[in-house]
Image 1: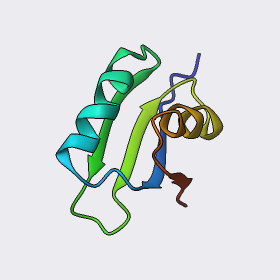
Image 2: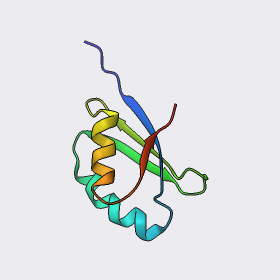
Image 3: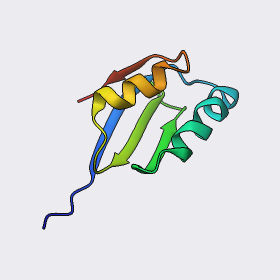
Image 4: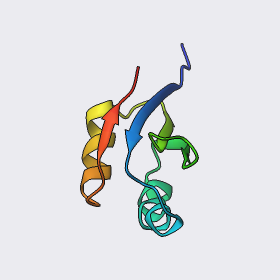
Length: 74
């Protein structure tokens, strides 16, 4: 049985520590997310999510519920 992790990468507007705190509680509560981080030093404020089961669309919907932009990066 294959045990692959997907790394999903997004451009966001999660720029400040306050923004990060707002979204972190939600991301930490989702058991399908094994690991996540936001590179606030990057111009795109890159959000990386490690998950076996969540799709790009699901992550986008989660982030947008908190009124943040979220666009997949290649």
